[in-house]
Length: 175
Ligand code: AR6
Image (cartoon, rainbow, N blue to C red; front, side):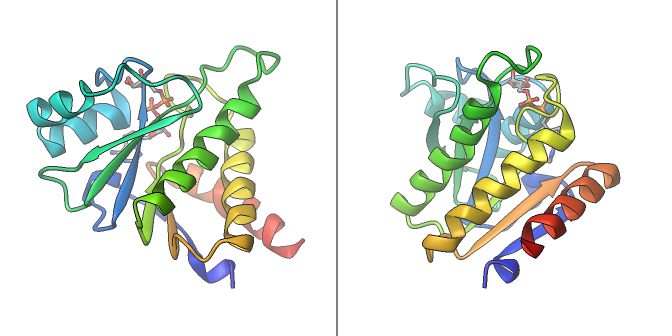
């Protein structure tokens, strides 16, 4: 049952005791503000930066993983969302690819529980409704055919964002 495998909560993703948390990173994997900054702070800036340096950055729409160091999670999956440029620059496909490739990597790494933030919904400026629809439909489609990950948690930083996700989740679940 897909519905019982998806949760939508308000919270701080750095506090989540799950197998993997997803970071909304930049293509240099250099750390930054927003959820990226919070994850680096909580994991340990030095350690996480050093672990990220094993990669030559990460293209938009793809994902790279590192240990989670001081976080309660086991792994951090760093994905790079698109910068919103008005919608005609392939943003939707790139955002879908973030969720898709992160789910693929989570399966490879045998992560049973995975927490996503609202990728691209902060400084990258993606319209929230559209981003939430992509997040939920991509994850729901995945869970239809894959038994893993067992649980996906969308961890959102504000109540209005939770409301958007819950509304779209109801629409998608009713279909
Ligand atoms: N837990 C969960 N969600 C959070 C947290 C948190 N601790 N902190 C912020 N958010 P953003 P982006 C929400 O800007 O748009 C960085 O500088 C936030 O409210 O973090 O993908 C990177 O280095 C918003 O809804 O990511 C990149 O350069 C969502 O997380 C760039 O920002 C994403 O906002 C990536 O921009």
